[in-house]
Length: 240
Image 1 (cartoon, rainbow, N blue to C red):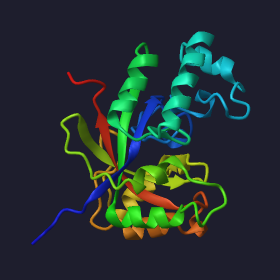
Image 2 (image 1 turned 135 degrees about the vertical axis):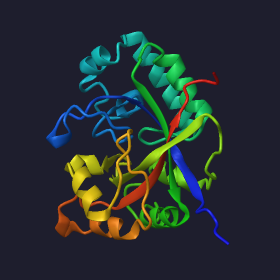
Image 3 (image 1 turned 60 degrees about the horizontal axis):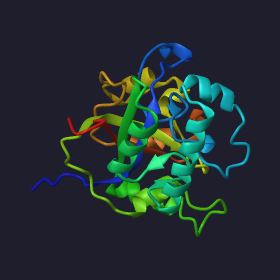
Image 4 (image 1 turned 120 degrees about the vertical axis):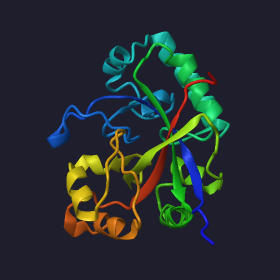
């Protein structure tokens, strides 16, 4: 009897969509949640206590159409949500209601927003929790670890629509790269017989292991960080 592989929620992301601005895919829009491609609307500047949180704030203020009063309000909200463990470092939301609240409260004026949830399979979750266990590393817990540790099963909500699989390389900071950072989407598709869909993500693979082995082999020139495959779901902004 065939059983579906269980997936677990890592968390939700809120991004301002931007076209890729480098390489052979320049000008293409893809639905990754990597902030190498898009601007995260929750980031280090959003916290009141981070070092140099006002560095580049002028550009952020202009691009996100924020004034000083709104930035202060964001920081108060983010500090409280962080204390309440509703968000994780640096830019992840643990609950759908939380990311919706943040988006609708502070960024209702932004049209090109992306809310997405990412999920890791049972085996990938185990590997991730082992790799980033705060007891084994010297940089503390990151939001992705905290989210996966909750073991929240994949949602079957009608508000979340599966849009494909991403390959992400996780930094110790909690930020991560996507395979697009290396401009290898076409190479991966041809090498492993993958299909890239309308969202710029992979439709699936019979076996992700050889692909991940390839990404995690530093001889192949990728970022020297652990790479994982994640299921990505597009989230409706509201209940309509």
